[in-house]
Image 1 (cartoon, rainbow, N blue to C red):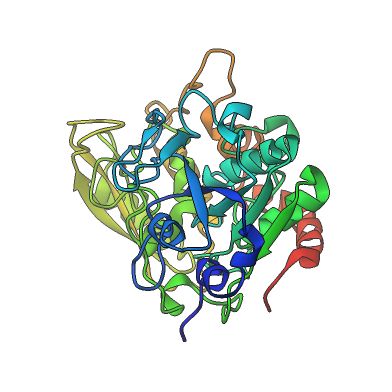
Image 2: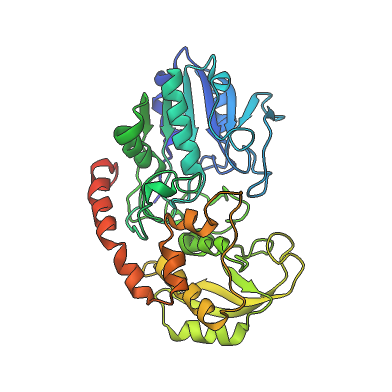
Length: 386
């Protein structure tokens, strides 16, 4: 079944929303249509759209920047338009960036995961647009790992950050348009229009839509990596490699001091739903353990419908911590005075304290269920698709 993107619906039937307006566009490399044409080119080429400025999230509008790399504002060589970086000197559009704009169009393919930074960028753009009196139009895209499953703890607002910008569970089961509706109604209050997808249903994974998979991050190159990301991204908060600098980021986990075969065997004995673990050896070309031989596991997706990646990775962390108590460590804060990275990713200090205390993983899983049920009831009011 082919799904029609919000971008295509907008260009076919809703350009009246920007008639006579000066328009900005927030986009990324995966902002393409079903024929792989980018939204920058599609909007710029439409005779009824006056596109005058571009905005880029993490990795840049063309995807040429690695994770965490500061991106400078510049002129886009392909379109000749100014590009305002929202991952450089500022993460939120300044008044100067928005000056002269009447509307800003957001066309981002997010990951459906709370700590993926496109979520924060969307919120910051909406808030800045509200202050500047600029209308916001979100061109909806599919939730890539389906819009049914929710999982993980709801963010404690005391741990709000760029990788945790809103009180959501780690896997929140909303499209970016549905999320924008929820956040706008409950907090922001900007002039928001969401252009829905046509033909998408909640149970669909991205590879069931007829649409191409285009990585929106250089470290999420496959749909399997995105599927695992709600869990394996937590490895970023430790001294284990999450596979950055390899051909399988967020699918490989390892360190120089692990025993690959025995770790894979023990993890497979847990019979975690939807997963198998394969012994693997790799040398990261950048990031943690750069240039060092790492041993570890390839987290292999065998059945994605039953897979619960957050729960699975708790078992991985608990197992590694128990087997290697003198080697395993939590990563130190990224900035002086900041919280440990794993706390920011998890949305509280609960994971770190639980693992350090060697308490059963099942107790931690049970602890987030009441808040997760509350979120599911809240979420129901903002769903655009069945």
